[in-house]
Image (cartoon, rainbow, N blue to C red; front, side, top):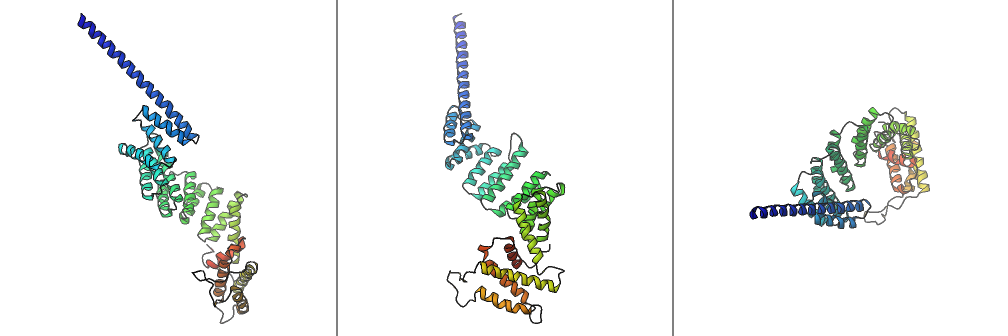
Length: 367
């Protein structure tokens, strides 16, 4: 009887201790959650230092909590404590190497340190990693973010490569295709940018952003007639688009003054060359050229100033079109190019820029 009674007391005591232990554990977890939520609020309010303290406190009550460690690592990273952040993140990654959020956090950390290879590696891990919810959207977000990071780091070839792969696997949605086309343009891959904008316009012919983007991309490719077509439509769709309107002016000036265009008569070609030459002379009057300098910065001696060369060429232009002066047109354009380059700091009008483009691109402007 005594043994039974003692056994009963022991069982009851064990149960009481277990209840107390569980209650204490739940209280610790509740306190940890409260501290963690405070940290999240402070981080969202732009107070990362206070957030760090609350995340640390939360971890002191729940040592192995994955989310608390990840949030602390992010906060440490965002305050520049990359060494501490990396230690936490690498530990989490070693335990869950396929976790998308951990890999993304490491990619952002290495991007902050401008470690290009590691940045790409961990962003790729995030793109192809495991996401517990909405995996497709999270992977797409990570991919777009990687391209933005590469552009900020001026890693244009890598950004272009990512965009080519991304565009091939992108869902056929106009807003995504437009976003990729814009990124191709930022990455200076203008052929793919133009193709991207054209794909958008196949399903949304009047899209002002796609029209403007296609016009700018064609302009960068020196396809001025194509650019003029898209930019005209862009300005018609959005009269407030000042950038497209200005680029359109340049395109039209190039096309209207191109002396090498197909199908123009000899007399019209000569008229255009003389008109370009006179415009270059007016530029010289308004913005005198600087004395020619050597690569070391010293003024070169024995070099004829552009003003003198322009006056000499004006005399020779009287014979343009006559026998013996068949190469004079190219000489004129060479001189115009030098004048435009020497006075580039004074170039303020679309006409000025058109002259420079004409002198630089003597073929292809009819495209």
